[in-house]
Length: 572
Ligand code: AMP
Ligand code: MG
Image (tube, rainbow, N blue to C red; front, side, top):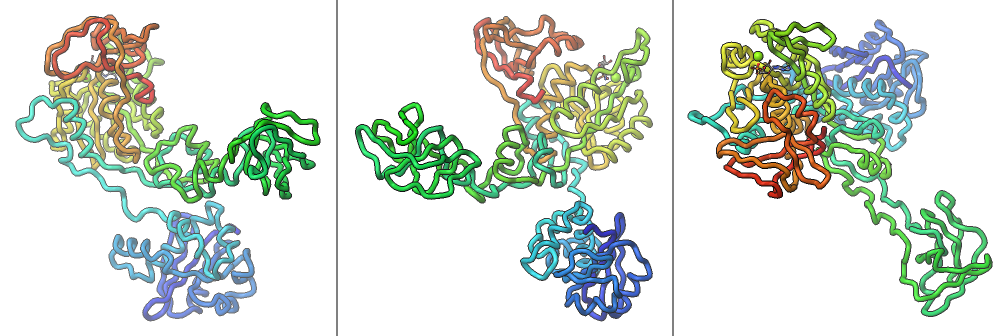
């Protein structure tokens, strides 16, 4: 049954609360007695109705008229009356009442139960609840489903306006310190939803996943060969008569194999009763009537124990795990059809600058340039498994930028802007953010990359990336990537890197950490792009990663180890 409305009745101090949930709305009414509640329902008929009451449903059926039926018993009717227990959602009702002052506990319970049951009905899960016979209380064995179906009463916490503030007097911040400050300032913001395992690639687990059953579920054979009881074998040549039939994957052999006999067995077949050891086919000879091989064979050779991979109830994957193809294999093997994941983090991307033409299919004058950052940043966000939100391009105009940021915080959890983030006359993004008093311009000691503007706008973090595409990419990979990961629920991430020999010469002064566009040559040594000019976008495409040179001074000679951070390690 799928219902168009759910009505829930809960006892109040003097009378009843009746909550009615229909798609898109929930209303609650005080009633003096059941007759009034029934009247209210019949006055506003709305298709198939589930009426949940907390006493005997039979007592309600007659006043409800001939179309009514009761559960347990009936599982479908124009008006199905079922017994519910409002206390199943006590915690949620309490939270609702706290968030909505003036609501009584009975009203909150009625509202929450009505909403949860309607949501489950809309998901198509109501038949499952109605099929349960565990208790004559609807939903008693689906409490977690009911709880999960409810929308959160709270918005995720938003950032404090001064969360990015730097202590006074701080001039240049080393990269590592900037990263640890950023990490402390941010919080996870993405709520939770359920998702079919098959569709969960790239999503982030919100709860640990537990194995529904062991893997493998039963002891089975690891090879093609012959199975027998080890106890009946010894050293030297062995000859065991074969039983009729065989055991194969998906075709279990239903009877015991007597001690002293053997059975033809194939990879993945459940070990029949009486079999604990398998000898590899290649080590045997058989004429179809018996099998011969050289003993001794080790007990339990070539078999897999039940649960040797994962035990039933064991944690298969931890919360925060970003699901990759192998994870989908594991979850499916363990019978996990649905997972609780974080809602996709919505990442808004906005380009700024009078010279920017938003799309390469529009004409550009010589003084104008096509927007390179927005497609790059949108694709990064998408590749990281987030929902990219294209906030377009705005001119260097505070009013326009302000309007777009206002729109942006409605559509996105975090905003990446590019351009206008320094402290110059034309740097309208930082001017606007600082006029609101929520800006911290971080002068990070890194090259390429001028100050990174960090601000909150209506509680959402804004990363003001440099306009220069090379600097924008480096700042996005080094700063935005771990920050977004934390906000999305997957925790802070450090880039993957390893030492390779340098295939270049370069000396640098102390002060700034440097990222060079680099790629590995045939010998596995790092070459760097011919020019360090930060306007050279072609170098970003030429590269397959970055070479990271330390904050201190260094004179790199060919053959010296340098740290290579492959693009692949940044998830691109
Ligand atoms: P800004 O940070 O606004 O001073 O810009 C620094 C440099 O980056 C300037 O040469 C800009 O023209 C260039 N730039 C800014 N935004 C973009 C963009 N979206 N795509 C390509 N270049 C840009
Ligand atoms: Mg500009």
